[in-house]
Amino acid sequence: MPQSDALQGSLTLLVLKLLAKRAPLHGYAIMAAIHEASGDVLAVEQGSLYPALHRMEEDGWITAEWVARENGKRVRAYSLTRAGRKQLEQAEQRWNSVTAAVNRVLRMA
Image 1 (tube, rainbow, N blue to C red):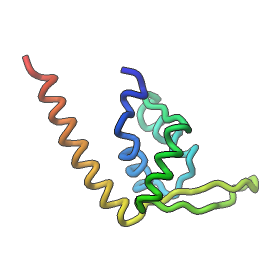
Image 2: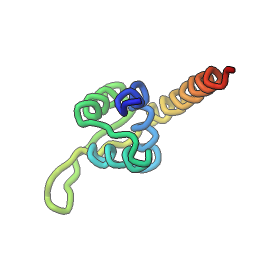
Image 3: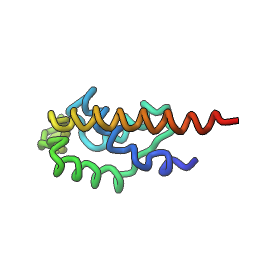
């Protein structure tokens, strides 16, 4: 299965989960964390991540603030909001339900 197919529909869940555990994170750190945590299986492209981050910010699930790095460069760091935590909980429940159903189908003889 191509990586993009594996990520289809799960990017929001992955980002919210990472931010719940490691916030604040900037975009590149989010991409790197997903890649590392997945055992180098999942790779998020900038063209997918940043529109998703903007949608989540518009939906009130995350906030962003400009922060200065040690080299003087400014980056946007993202954090989860209370609404984002609620959305994460709902998304995890849906994901668990869907993956359980897929596993039942895969185990059919």
